[in-house]
Length: 281
Image (cartoon, rainbow, N blue to C red; front, side, top):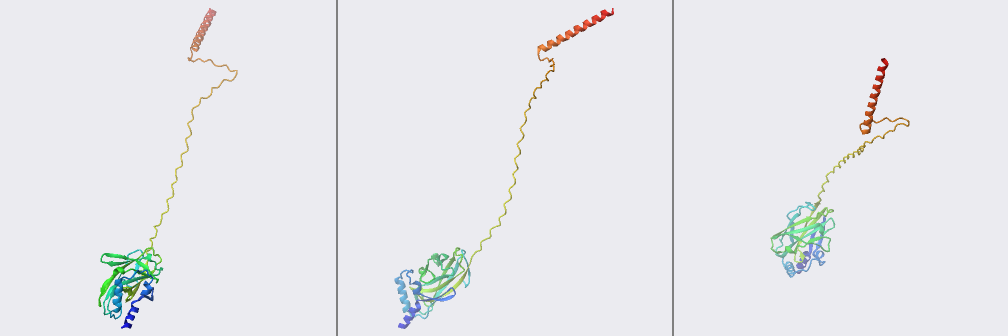
């Protein structure tokens, strides 16, 4: 009986996870011994002691119910829904059973690349991601503890995994699962690898060449300024030329001079006529 208990203790701390295409044995101590997982509660310790002393035959089995191997996930798109089932067929009950879920990616296991959520009676709940001693990211599933998993019973759990749109270099990632009772692992793990697609950025619409600028009409030449009529300068008669008398009626003196000249001419004519008459007699 003592050797059986020792064998169970060794088996309880071994979790078989196939990550990144290779088989890795991650013991509970190597995965959770860095202290980052927090203290173990008294209830978990009691569940672990009860599991070790019970007459179990084999380990809990865990399997994927959805999300086939190689399924594609779009970065920044809809989450990948993963359903897993824990089955107890060991011949004895387990207390405080919960699933384990781990992520291993090709981009260097950056926590910022993923969001993991679990289905609860109150809706989807975000699970913190943590990195411990091994190069794997583990989701904190402590809130998903099942009170009792009797022999022959199955417990189902649903998860959503979202890949960040900023994980531009992520090509694929692996999801590993196992079962945990108290602080120890009590189940053979299952795993699947998923491919990551990146949406193609839409090509920018061709930009049309700007229309050539229309030539602006040249401003009309300023009109020549209108010339103001200039009065021709008065010309003077050459020296020695007698000036003509002005006879216009512009002044009274000219009028009187004209009348006087006419009377004088009339008188002279009459004198010549009288003289001719006397000579003929």
